[in-house]
Length: 55
Length: 376
Image (cartoon, rainbow over all chains, first blue to last red; front, side, top):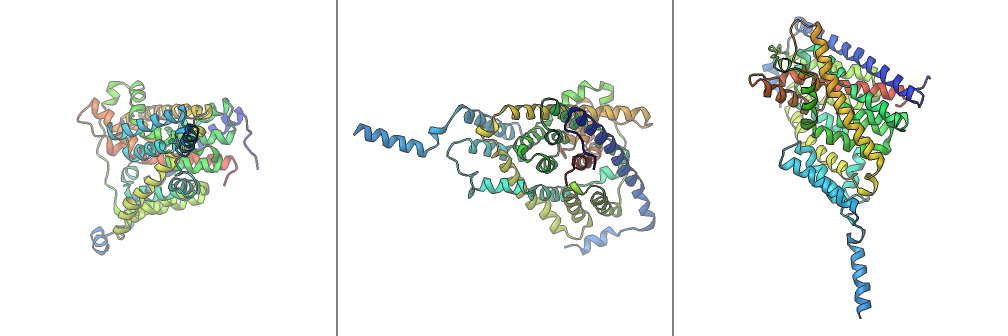
């Protein structure tokens, strides 16, 4: 496994990779959230029924 | 006779804490009193500062046995160190939180990553002043403004820094209403601060039920190092959104969260003993934490301004700073600053989107840090 060196350069490399990867991954979450409303076309939850059946 | 009385007095004095009292204790008692003052008089996050401040005062009175094995503060510290308390805090937070604003505004989740530049600025600066790379990672995560996540990552990367990191993270979270507004105003024009945002779409129950299941699955698949926290957050949220276990959701978001907050704040405050806490290293970490919060706030605002270059419907850049996490404090600060500029502007719901995304942003950053530094 390639490890991050315990140096200032290592800190820069770690930070840059982490920052960019965070953007990429959170964009992925954004895409999933943008697609989430599509489920409403296929299925609907009867909220009133859920509330009635709740404890 | 006088000799006997003198010896007797010395023994008595030795049994009290007075003989061991030094200026460091006095300083920390003043710090703790300041926190209690801010909590009660200024109403600055009393849920955090009251417990931290009070236990800080108590443990700096020499002779207090509460932090020794057998004392309750000791067991509170164990609950934090063994990573039992942070996931249970997240369970309660999930049960209290409506993720609707985040689900309704997918584009705003980018602010949850944008507002985390502070993590990396602090990380690099910590390395520059001589901390190891793992210690620097733990210090950097203060900038994620997410207490349980800061504790979790620190326990994996540099457990010996837990007192300093947790105190810095929670203190700055509580002080966000003081730290953030000047940075937000500095980086925005009056016109930008007055931008009103349109109504957010309504999120269906089905989406709200699917959200925690999808996110928990993804996090466990891609970020196992931070999965325990996010999984509990999502479990709490599922309890809430399913509507079928109202009692469990209320218990998780009420009693469980209350008890865990009490344990966490006393545990953190009780680590602030003068003899171990008053070091140059602590000052460095506290300073770096402040830098992390300032840069995180600033980078969130700047990210929102960059997004505005591409968006038809402009967003108020003040909601960018909410991406730093610290739910719901940062969202409230965004709302208050915008409301001061334009009394008709109610940004709280809009700011909650990036604010909640910030929780995931911190988890992702922390997960990547742990993975890149070879921690499990």
